[in-house]
Length: 478
Image 1 (cartoon, rainbow, N blue to C red):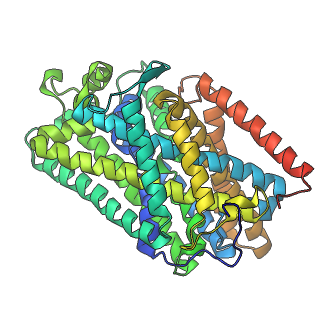
Image 2 (tube, one colour):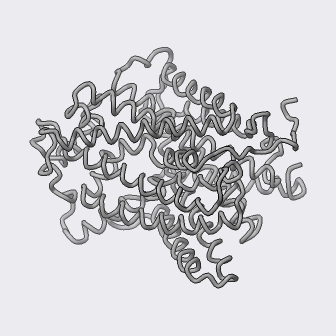
Image 3 (tube, rainbow, N blue to C red):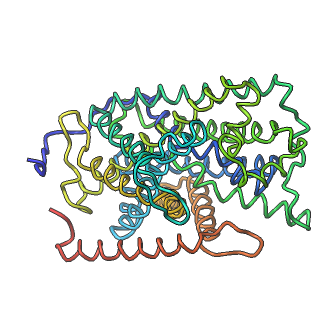
């Protein structure tokens, strides 16, 4: 009975624009938004460099979203980029796009699930570090923490199977908690004597001998994190067959998720550098440089700032916001990944088992697969997930590139000059980001690490084998 395919069951159109926006925004803003100010933004570019880079990245994402909105109107189908690439450039390109995109979505699920362990370590110390443990690349993996992460995944697998409308409402509630926490802490920092605009100086990171060259390199170092920072708005196409509104409203949903995401990133960065522990004499570079020696909330500037300006209450507010962000990331990417796998299965790219829809209108087999794989990845430890996530950023750039080029191709036959221009521009920018991530360039330390290259090679080989097996089976799974 488990492998029976009920072809009479269909996805249900129950998601409102607010639900879809919440799913997209919740994917954009996950756990990483609270740690990247201290680990990526400030160390690489400082506050002003981050502002410039994120504004440029936002513009690029809006251009790409313009291409997405055009393609969604042409193909309002679950599968999104996979459908666009296949229809525009054939089966091989469709599979290639889907193969990397599925990695991009799936990798974020365990990253957010295990991030819950990090916030528990920061706030509650070693409360969940019990049972047997082992070490992976210097990181201790504890049974208690893995139980927490995998238990969270199991919970949301159960929640997801209740139906997309329940998932959408839950996601919307969690997004409100996320935004509420950020706004409260930002307001407290604005009026707090512990926060000062003078702390924001220097505007760039004082680490390069050449001012001009250094500024450009710093801005680029943060700019290329665009796919990593904004991946999530592109999950909207995966939900089109479950949305109860016209595709004409999709562009507003995607654009606002991008702009609001950029706003949260920048607000958290400003909070992190404007509220500095007194021991560092109001110098954010000194504080950021010493993070590796910090423990608990002091090791996460955004959490530390909330605690300084609001005391213990601030720590609870920001903790609630962070946990909500983790959960929205899990729910959003879990939903998007299962829908992508469902679409690939329906098209014969992967076994038909994945296209089973339960009585609540949910592709539950695809969701079960996502949960099992994410749970297994959780067991590998945070360093390995970091390597996989770097690959995921590349997968997002590939999805952006395919969608933009597909838009340009279809617009050419329709003589849509605006789409042709934005399509080609989006393709070039996405491809450029992918190249920067793949090819080490002098002065830029933003390419994939050695471990990520090895995993990327393995993923490519797996994809080739998977596609060859599919062709041997006669061109598709039955």
